[in-house]
Length: 377
Image (cartoon, rainbow, N blue to C red; front, side):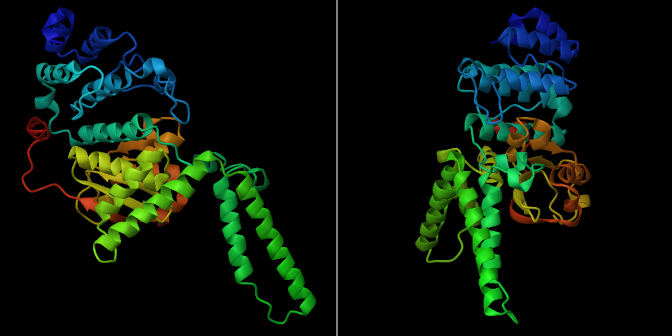
């Protein structure tokens, strides 16, 4: 699809009226193509809601069949125009989009104007990764229901994770009962109460263990554990390289399309790693959450002040929990901004929680510019 076939579009681009050019672009490709994301200044909350509704994006991203042949073109178009970054993966539907995107960037002089804008590039990469996990793979987090019931009274909670946690607490309480100075009658009563608590929690956990829970906890993680053991045995025992561990997690989560934050982070990391994005890292927090960071400076990961202005979080789990709101899964602009978003998402306790590094893949010395790298691909 050559740009010069469309004089109104070409005229707008050459006049650097990019918002107007984008409107023409939408009409050229598809009347539904990103109709809710028509502004280069960024979508409003209502536009985002309209967009996800158009995708058929309910909490679990069950896409309607009528959008299946447009999904990858939509994402390709958005990343190209909104983030001035040409995705490395050609859409399965509409191969001409790749050539069209290159012409768009070249004619609009986006490469020259925005090649230095690493933050925009990293935001584009994050969005691609999160959307790949949540839409292309359709991954469901078994514990989303737990976090959607955060304000529900304990006795009203209907998710497996909460009651499984109560079961584990009951087991620990039973194991650590202190009978010092207690009479036989008191000991019997204490045991009866502790066992009743355990039985109640076990019954609740069993009742609310749904198909997603079974696929993740009983199948996916069991296969991950077995694969890790096999990999360790092949190398003579001990821990396997972290990259291999993440690859195994991602492979099994991709197979079952189930995964909590850890599996989501592994899928996101491997997508970016295989696409050649650097630097990236998979991190965990003591607030029981894992995610991926793109573009952080090679400094103290426990000090947000040193993360640099181009650091971006890629968190498909949080984006999925929040019904596709990309501001929950893709955000950045440096350590301070990321810290603020983490506090909003994880709560004030994150102020006292630093992140420990799991795996970092740094950029090579004197790397090619991002558009040069794509040419080599």
